[in-house]
Length: 117
Image (cartoon, rainbow, N blue to C red):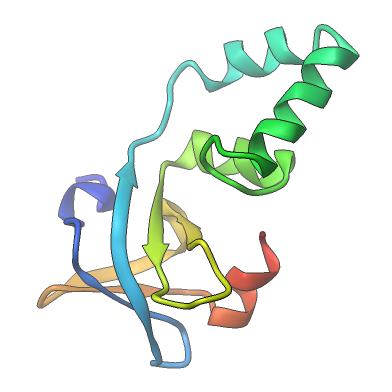
């Protein structure tokens, strides 16, 4: 069973250090068409610039291109961090170690997640 199938919106998210860092805001399954999208995007430099700008100005996930590709391939959750200075963090499905009793446990620290954006 895919780990993302066990995750629900609103679940608590706990990092590797055992610190509660927020709640699940969004669940995005792996995208089977991600490779086709990558091939079409890398066809021109203008498309790469547009992809970079969209990751900064609105389209999700708001992360650098390399991380966005990883998230699209693996599937991911967006974490509402309830912080004034953050718009949320993203964790790939393979960073989820387990889901139990309404809580998602990650193999990353909050520092690792913050460094991705």
